Length: 271
Image (tube, rainbow, N blue to C red; front, side, top):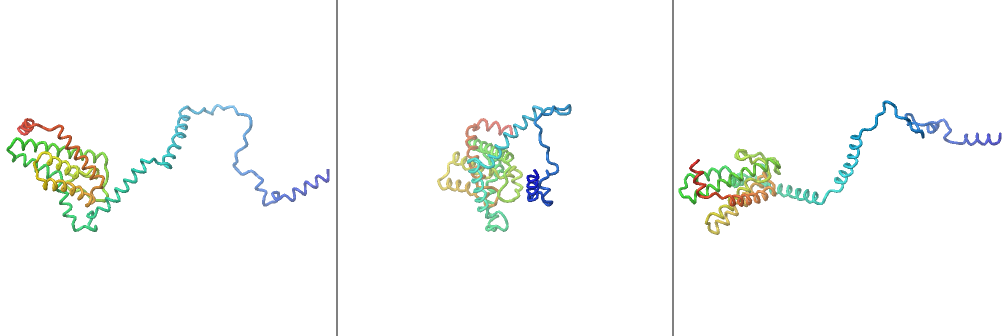
């Protein structure tokens, strides 16, 4: 026994962890949780069982969080394609905005480009149509002008409604003009000037007898109006393309609800 005790003392003496500087390693840290007992304690009077709503909420969170993480880490192909096309649209629109400000490369041509855009504005077209309608003395002319006025009003309401719904800003920080505020054309998508130019061009090509050079000039005018809105920084390229598409469908709608000569005469007499 004495030999075994002496060997135990020597082993304890040689143990590094028994030194004074290492005694704190053998002690449990402060605030450590007590070991759980094998027996279960009976719930006291203050303990309340978890409500079913808490369990359902926890299950819902556990089901949603992994899905959101997967969506962020693994975006869909459609989302990647859409964001890529949107980035290309913004980049190309900024490159074409050569008249967007005074410091732009084509700043000297800004006034002329804005004048081209004004030719597709709604106020001059509505005012000119009403003036021609008052001066017209033929039934056929009044019928065409009344339907053109209907198409112009439809264009303004459609563009204003879609712009108010989408609220997309232009590629540059440009303030709308007074004429834009009058026609509620204050946002970028869709381009109201482009939709109006496309609709008016298609309307004239369908209901007026024009020579081939005039037809070509009419199409070029519509294209230049849309391009001018991109050059001054008011719209993106996709805004103008969408405006052309909307203008075409507006023309098709007016063709479907075309007012006859008798209806036009009744409206003119009531007016």
